[in-house]
Length: 142
Image 1 (cartoon, rainbow, N blue to C red):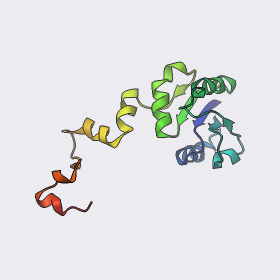
Image 2 (image 1 turned 30 degrees about the vertical axis):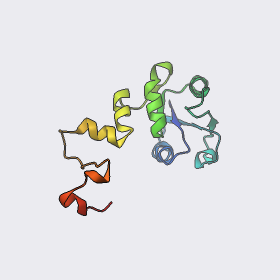
Image 3 (image 1 turned 135 degrees about the vertical axis):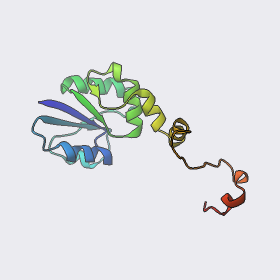
């Protein structure tokens, strides 16, 4: 049996992961997140309260839960959590299911993604100020 943590489980992404894996016979789902009301608190597998990753106790509390529940894998279910876990994966006893830290940093912001892809694929033109728009571009909807 594989123990998989969905964190934070109360997000829409968390719900989608839960619905995708809930009937897998070889997976035991564990749900966790901050102390707020969400759909995840009402699932039969239970819900563990863990401070938000921005809180100073977030990482130690998460690691405690990983050991307590013998978690093998963590599914990050929020953009900020994905980045945080990619940056702290070496401090965790479970495998974080996410791309490299660099990829998480780039894809966290559309502007950084565009910057990384510049010259490789067609990208929209970005104007930082209205004064930059001239000619045919001035007819664009804003």
